[in-house]
Length: 553
Image 1 (cartoon, rainbow, N blue to C red):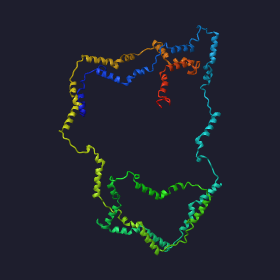
Image 2: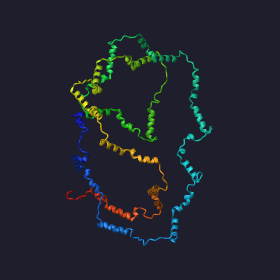
Image 3: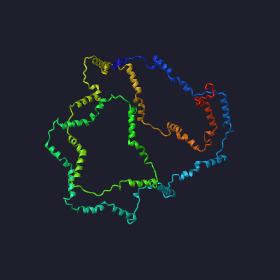
Image 4: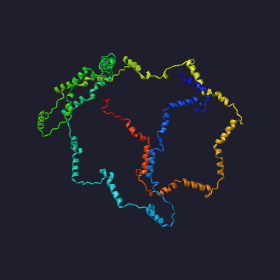
């Protein structure tokens, strides 16, 4: 059922064999479906309304229309000015000459003719003029680059004998470390100390005691001799035991086992004991105790000459250890002094390095845990928890299907049925064996259609006429007709009269000053369906109810 092959099998078999209607309108079922879709379509339902909602029909004999026409005639200048008659004036008439002179006086072109013909286009270089120099000076003053110059770009020279330079020289000599150490460097190589002085002997002993090489000498010698250390030796067992004690894995082993089995509170604040413990810890915490003090100790201002400040200073001098402890003298112990020997023993007992000496010796002793129980358990757990192995792709599994099984036989049959080559094989063999006579009506019709749609046949007459050449004179009728049509269609000629009349029109400055346009806008607003419904749209969502209405009470 779900096979794509079965789904397309009937369609593939019926390819090229369909017999039906040439278009949708020839099929009564499809026409009926289209009609039902139109009936159910909201767009078709509102189509006529959308066409008619912007159309407003008013009867011509309506009182408001009649009144508007009469008002328009009263406000219009159409019937106000009536010319008595038309007459022709001779070219030399006095009033015509006077009108011509007045037009020349008012003409903007004649007024600007001297400037346009003589001055316009004449070059003038303003370099060196007053305005150009003023502009340069203002640019220099307002220039951000020159205003914010680096001090290094300014030319400046200081007198080497001036007071600041002399003071700088003296300070440089005082701060010179080479001059400061020069006398000591000379004396250092001239002093000789005897090698048997107590200080030299003590320094040698201290060097021997502090030497890391001498400290490890016996260890290095024992390493050169080699050793025989068995697995059941006491130091090895002790090291393993200490490793288990210090192991983070062993430390968390019990916790990992108990994970998921704890039963208790969801968080700390739900446990009254933990809440009480946190509160007691806060009360006992020195940090919490001093928290408010630390915040406020830097926010206290007091005048320096206040009595309490002066008293505190004196008390601080009395309580300070600066003058309380005074060392009498400095002395040097002999290397074999009893107190020095005793203190050295005490330091060795308290020394953390000596305490961990055995651990330092065991550090680096290798032990391979491969094959141990814990390692094998960890490997098994890793394989179980591995996301990669859990979500393996089916292609990675080794699987072999029987070639004669039902699924494989069905797949082979589907492949044969879906092959395009086998589907068209019979047609490919038959189409090369079909022969059609040249005088067949279809062949003749195809040739006629090819001749009619041929681009080369369509342009044949024109190409032959071009090869013959032509003789076309400027006074030919076709040339004159083309020039006349060009002048008629010319945008320049079309706008010439308009350009000449520019500046001579006398009328209203805007629409509001023209009573005709104002009246037309008013009539358009009256007839506008949007203006008609404007107040309704504003007030349709407002509902006013008196507060003392019976239903409200």
